[in-house]
Amino acid sequence: MSDSETVPPAGPEGASGLPAPAQKIAAGYAFTGPALDLGALLWDGQCHADAPVRIPLTVLNRHGLVAGATGTGKTKTLQLIAEQLSAQGVPVFLADVKGDLSGIARPGQENHRVRERSGDVGQEWAPAGFPAEFLALGGLGHGIPVRATVTSFGPVLLAKVLRLNPTQEQSLGLIFHYADTKGLELIDLKDLRAVVAFLTSDEGRAELKNTGGLSTATAGVILRSLTAFEAQGMADFFGEPEFDTADLLRTAEGGRGIVSVLELPAVQDRPLLFSTFLMWLLADLFHDLPEVGDADKPKLVFFFDEAHLLFDDASKAFLESITQTVRLIRSKGVGVFFVTQTPKDVPGEVLGQLGNRVQHALRAFTPEDHKVLRATVQTFPRSAYDLEELLTGLGTGEAVVTVLSETGAPTPVAATRLRAPVSLMGPVDTAELDGAVRGSSLHGRYAQAVDRESAYERLSAARPPEAAPVPSPETRTRGGTGPRDEPSLVEQVVSSGMFKSLARSVGTQLGREITRSLFGTARRRR
Image 1 (cartoon, rainbow, N blue to C red):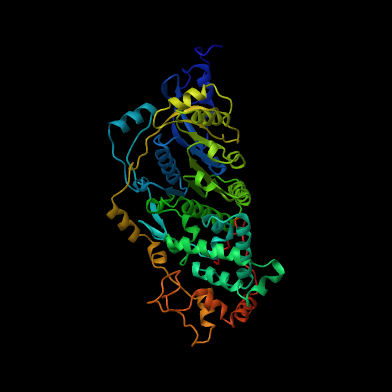
Image 2 (tube, rainbow, N blue to C red):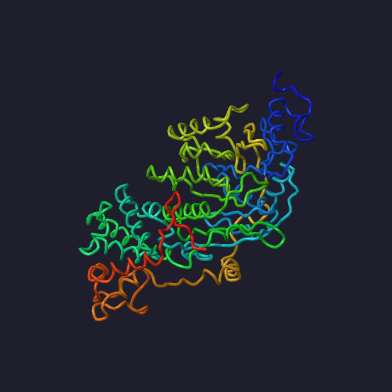
């Protein structure tokens, strides 16, 4: 049968006039249950509104990838998917690196481009806004502050943001293990500095005698890394109140899922930090949520933007933890979509678990570009299209799609013209954004940082009063060591004769070691 011949209707109603290969593709998206509408099939340069391309709601926890070169429409695709998930009662988490996604909370504005796009794909476009919460790492930027305690963040993720090598990462893990067994919570960075200094002192060195010890050189590297980290203004990301990831799972009145938008423009020059914090959020969800098995819809869909940053220079242990988390979190009802430029940015062990793919255009200007293009084509199922040609010719807002069907089988590769988002395609006014943050039900819980007693304060309080008092709030800053004329943190630790007995007594009182997950993140105290 030639490409110009047709077959009897087998797909969506009205799609029977398509050529045979296109009809077969259309039939692969004729789902019977609830689904998200991505757009309409492109074939031989024509958009066929009667051949919708969709993704079943039940397979969103089977993860996905949204990829494409800069400027090809990835952000609008995220917005389109998030809108429809919210409308069907599914909470969504979006990392907004450039500040373009805050408009999801406001109805969109019709213009000739929207009218043209909606007409092409058969979309009944009507403006709508969606319930949204705006978050900001450490309160930097416009949003509810998102903080983590050092104890909860754990040694694996912290080693990555501090750029420690594998040996130093193992030593950091030993430090956390000591603090855990002694029941010493590390709330902020000064707590960690205090424990590191103690464990390398004459008095504290014996504490790790049976576990290999902590070399002075390695401790020095860790302390210098912490100092540099703080000097870059990153200390405020660690502390309390710690963000409870259960707040990402909420629905609004009327049943729509809340879209949590993590505003990252203020920290976009610190990509290693924010990408690792995203992994902390995901890891925290993983070890807190119960198993749910197969469900009618996900509990949450988590969009991991700039995903390549997570994998760059990652240790083998780190990559193994990512792979395990992605594999196992689907059974807890969470779908994860990695957002990056090409599938090759994602390690094969992770890419193989991403069942739903939306690939925007790629550039092929250099030999390296052509190599990436060919490698990308090889990650797709066999197709009726010439994918190398297609992927370089797609327009903005067009993509190559393959998803999992309701039975879990991959759908045929479909060139797709995507729908237009119905919310505002652009940021909301800053004053309006700040007003939404102040009016949030989360504002009272997270807005004000607190600095309760933890390892640093207990250490200082255990010292003789005349030796070195704890700096007052007026003379010390968070994560700092006080004015220059006060004893250094190391000096305070080394001279603290009561610290060892204090730590032991605390450990005895708690009578347990902190439980840690795949990434070394600590279980939250509920």
